[in-house]
Image 1 (spheres, rainbow, N blue to C red):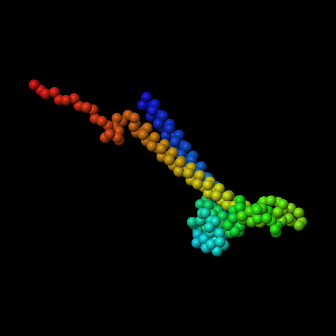
Image 2: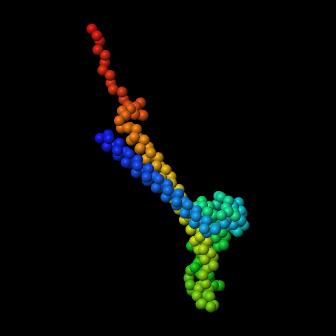
Amino acid sequence: MRKAFEIGGLVAAAVLIVFGVVAIVMGVNGRDTVNTSLQNEYIVGSSDMTPSAIKAEAQKAGIASAVKQWPTENIANQEIDTGAEARQMAMYMHIHSLEATGGYTYAQMGQFTAKPGTPKSELMPGGGTSNSEFAASDPKTKQPVPNGGRQVWVTYNALGTALNTSYMASQLALFGIVVGIALLLSGIGFAVLAIGGALRNPETALSFVRRSPNKAPAVPVA
């Protein structure tokens, strides 16, 4: 029975080691794919993409209170080629979009540009209206004019979402590497125990907690 357990331990060790190596390789390849994809986009941070500069800019624009998360890294004039840098870039772009819309988000702005005299009840907090009856019309197409601020928000945040996706993919790849290392170490540990014959050794590292058998009382010799 012990021999079967030892063989099972070696098999389990081999499986864990293989899974660990595969997870590490996949994680490294995943991070490399993310970094290569970002490099191919040739994204460079603008000169105001430092924590201090963006805060001063937001305060000057009067939208600092609308910012819920501030960037913490300086990426000004730097090439964005890692997931962590992509995450910072997305946060800077989010602030830029708030500056362009006066501090309002997509949901706070109307779909169309409101025409003069639109009732206040038909206006959105961030400007514009979602009621086509009160929308300004394009003189050529006779169609409602889209809200420019809303379009800017859509463009900025579509790019920001892509950058955040790169960050998430990079973190998942890193998680895969960590799991792979854990599996690899576990497999090596199983192999050491099985090859070392741990099941045949009556001693245990926790022998100090085992209760010693009761000794029979000594019988006096007459």
